[in-house]
Length: 110
Length: 114
Image (cartoon, rainbow over all chains, first blue to last red; front, side, top):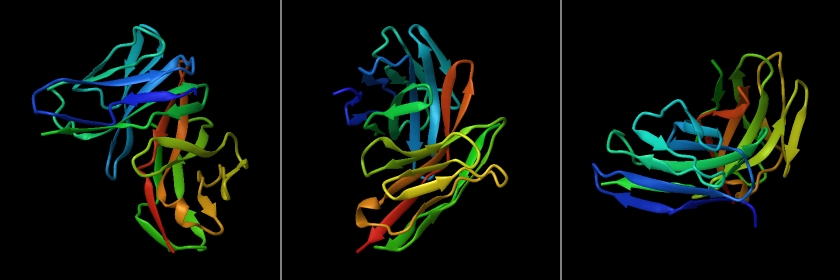
């Protein structure tokens, strides 16, 4: 089945630790995106990548980093500099205007 | 810049009631407009879309019409079911520099009770 896989679904980390969220797609899409979802805030764009080895900051990139070494993969690292990392994180890929979303990772920092 | 404002919830309806979720947008040019649905604990799924003025998107009994004169894209369904309980997001595409970035509203949570 073609789609986007995010793992893990739930992630717990101690404050001050970096953590990496996985996002893999087998749709052969060039563009990939990371969004953060908070209650009552909707989805906000963290980073996006239009092509391998290239990525751009979104609206709330501070405290996050990404890489795009392969077309299929777009991992997101939540660093210790992110002040409020507890949230639901969604990865997406797109072809033209059609976007496909993963199932999300809920990160809780304790 | 581009923005989307949608009706804040939560919205609670009885089964078979009529649903309207309001959405208005601010954008340069002529954006494409979307409604996405998120079921509990899941990612987003495209519900419907419209790409130009007066287009009507429809799917699963839901409809929305792209109204350029009022910059609106309200979601409607004539008779909701319990299975429609979810969070609904209005969104627009801001195309630029070869990428298609979605701008989302804050979401409206719908609960349908039997």
